[in-house]
Image 1: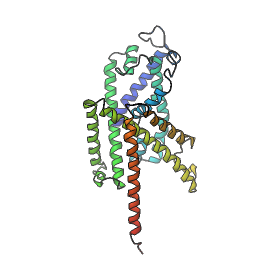
Image 2: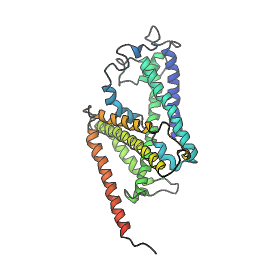
Image 3: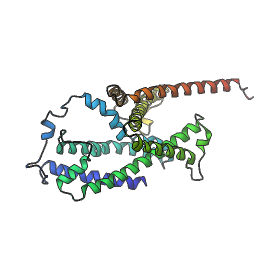
Image 4: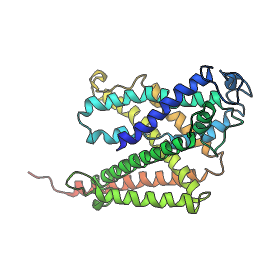
Length: 318
């Protein structure tokens, strides 16, 4: 299901980049433009950062929330056939796909739409397709957006249910959440995940400017916090791996430019969290997120400490 949902949005983005780039450089006529924009939107009207870098910093958490998902590769490792071969290949594919699909699409959008004209009432993809002259552009994009939402929801349910199962397996939450069906699906965790997801979705209708905005902000903070944890874990893992006498060459996948990449990733994610402090509408994410992270660490520490005491008190079998 995820494959077909993703295929629809991927195909749309490929068509958009090809047609948009052709219109941008004058190969296709663009409605409302006497000549091709070329790179004028990058150099004119204040350049790339007309209002400075602070607006970019403030919006980074929202962007992270919208473009999260690559971390799911790690979660799928336990259910992947031949993970030593397929997981590294998936990681490598993500790099060029990020450049092509995300950065390529943003490049075309920025080249065709002035930052003074871009808004949130209409999808920028619809604006570009309309200018190129594609009929029923809005209807097509509504279909694509719907499948993209289903794709994100599908991936989110998968990740959330598996994480709850993992926590249950480590005795961090109720064992009821760790029960699986005959096909290996953590059904109880899936039901809880879907129930909370439906309540969150309901808030976008009942309280779009309050509860929903808070949930989006907290979700963005959670994504960035997870990426910071991944970067820190990778940095410390490699150091300990070498310290224990292992060779890096024996690793199935070796992240390039170590330790620069994990350090840079951690610093940039931390900077995105700092940006939340300058946005009143998203500051609540720090007030909720930081205490929750501290609580998780405290809970983990106390539970492990209790478990160690229990093990020490048990007699050693002869």
